[in-house]
Image (tube, rainbow, N blue to C red):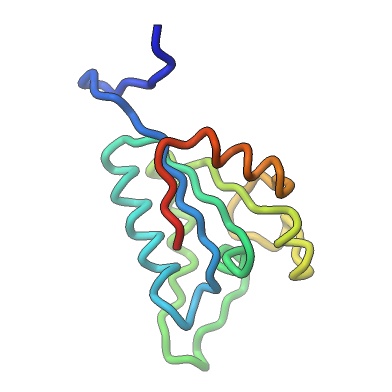
Length: 130
């Protein structure tokens, strides 16, 4: 018996991990990643997000974009739960190097050490890095 997950129509569900490494503003990567995640979730794929390096800032509470003339899209991360995207991982070392704790994030996350994050990535069918 295969360990592949099936969707309601009998199609194979792939495990997608979106790796977010960039700060939320200054590039288009963070917003593009969020949009792609929502699209994949709408197609009932097994979606997870990893926040590594400056990517941990994407889900930090209290973002103020008024000084850079950009829309603050961070509240959109709260919509992930409505799309059944609940697998959010933060690399412990990246979080600690930036002086952050789990309480600093907008959404519930699972904090993984660097090796555990690497192991989690090994289990994915598809990894997209932003």
